Length: 593
Image (cartoon, rainbow, N blue to C red; front, side, top):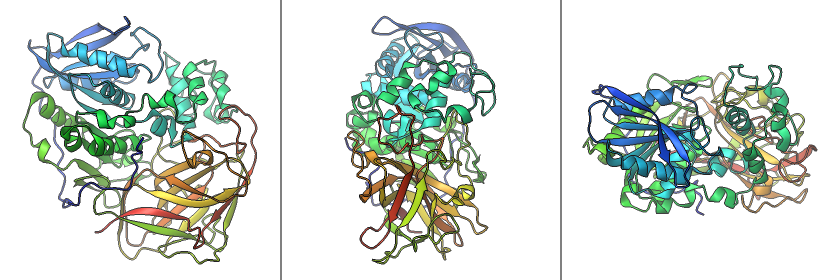
């Protein structure tokens, strides 16, 4: 399979940074009628139930399908979206996925959404209130199922608008390129999805469990395989996820990235730089634009990515990105659906396909492609005298190659004392806040290597995929390396703009893990996914490097034992090399100003 985080561009024309004008939703023109619990038959005889919102005036209308595992009582945005579109001339089919709430069948996340999505779309297209054109709408899981349905290529599916959605459940949901997303997987999975009746128990108490049972206790439990039993859960899907830590056929058959070259419909991917599914948002666009089967899929798919987490906002984490950062994504989606499902000639087809938010400058910009064609990929190298530990050390970032005799840096990674998660790309049932947050509390630790540039003498824009190439060894057979790209403000505040992880056993392949030889030097590539940030004059760039990011990612026990099965841990001694022959560096997508 062609992985999508490639450092390529598909055009050489850059768009001028003219102010971006986002659409406003036009006033509603329809009263709405609702049909409750409409049965929709699946091919195996199971009935999935949906609430159907229609314009009150009889007629044939385009249809939007939204498929959800969530209760509309707990997630009222699903109800509000249905009313929003129905009042503007769409039939909105809001369906409980298999095994959830009113729908029949067994709940097994992700596994039935290809076939069920096809059957639902085709059913909707044939109803008396349908004009035969169907789109799909929704975010998060409601976005993921759009990609699953598109994989089945239902004939009446015209377009999709996946928001904050994963494209590969393995690569950018359950893991980030092999690093296991512990707090999200557990909080979203056995905790929430195995509990039909949710409790409002506060940010650190696990819903459905005793008030005294907190993340602080449960997420430390080993082995991971039995963690859910502390809450009395017996979710088979949790056991299956842990039994498939590698990218194998269990994950491959539900991965749309494997079949982008078979898809012919346009997709509008919307998300945030700090969302847990930012990689899915970016891959959704690049996959369709570069590999889509039809010219329509390649030229008319779109990307919108803001300074957001799991939804549009002005402020996120510790930063306020200004009054233009928040966007009415419903209005953006409405314009997209109007064009494809109603035939409204609103100029969408003639606009640049990429709209991104440049943080630091705090402006929206339209582009012809992502990654940007004018990108200059430049290396900033790690330097030190062997004492880069903490922000009090001597670690430096420089455009210059390190000398041949540059001494290595060393740190000790103890899984019983991991580096805590402070901000980052996370969401949804996790105990730690997400987004850009001041990293100085962890940069004071000796098990964090800190490499910082000189003060910038001019603005530096970094927009696109970011990678760290690391030459390192460990005395353990397996371990992790975590890297963050940090914007250091003149007053010392240090906010991470991108982050990534590599699990050593997956350094060569996510499908064929291979343990390390203790003491042997390996080259690791850490994918920090992507960002768009203007590092201002007077700021500094920084790379933080360590071996844990807990509980956002599980603690690598350093033992090399099968994933999720062992309660044992061991300390690992890590060595990072940065001499002229083994020049560890960060590869930055620099955009000429």
